Length: 224
Image (tube, rainbow, N blue to C red; front, side, top):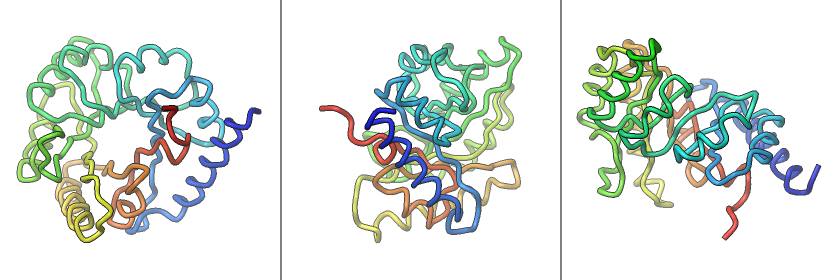
């Protein structure tokens, strides 16, 4: 085992040990390894150390690595262009980034045509940031309901990215708002609140996330 592989394995085991206590609500937490730019060998090392789900940000990387990674669920966690949805439907355990009705319609058409049901998360633009996609918080529950009534789709919960900030007084209320939305959708089948990356996952866990997407904390910084 190389020094890099040993580092990845050590980081994975440390994070999984941290997550063993659950989130702030005592619920189990799913770790999704964010593997943008990571090699199949690095990803396989993380899987061997205990990662059970890997998330790609780019469709091309998802396609290129698809047959080279075994032993873990394949998630898609990045922005999804409508014309690239065809590469994911039926091959992805969970699409985290259903952020608009146009994409829902395309995913539905593909799923029906392929006689499958695609699991998705409804992406919420919780910080109301122009640079990020997602439904506004005020439309989150209705977006979940629409997806639940759409052929070929099965909404499993919500995804959000908190604004880039170190100010817990700003981030905590947003995380709490996401948790309230998640709770409101639970009677309709919501299971996952995917929220938290390497810089903010501890706060997100404390405020109710039960799925986190982290890369740097597992693999180290990306090469410059």
